Length: 129
Image (cartoon, rainbow, N blue to C red; front, side):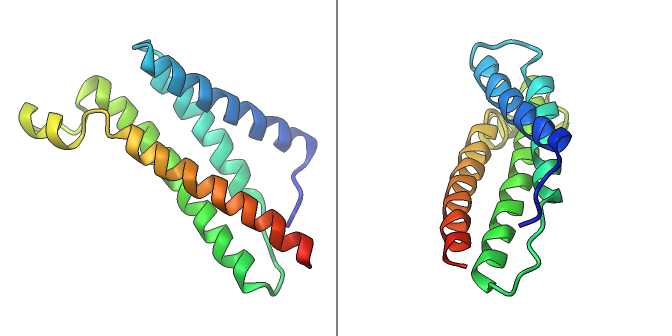
């Protein structure tokens, strides 16, 4: 795996902290929570996308794709978090409540599970090499 520089590691960690703070503040109904979460998701996802694996191990390549999918789901969660505050998709109220309102929690949960699994497996696969 390609290692990040010191500044990239700082942005990576700041992004992770901002995502946790944004998700927690959203539970407390703070109106600035989507902005904090979105900035954190952009920092975290972009720094994670910069890490590359150029080795021959097919398992690590598959796990990296899972990790990139979780990064996209983090960004989708940020978009849905914005939409939970202000119906930016412009759909009628009943459909909005049924399909969109607070569904960011589901995408965030899926992304977190994929992230935990792929991070753990990549670590164990790299130890085998």
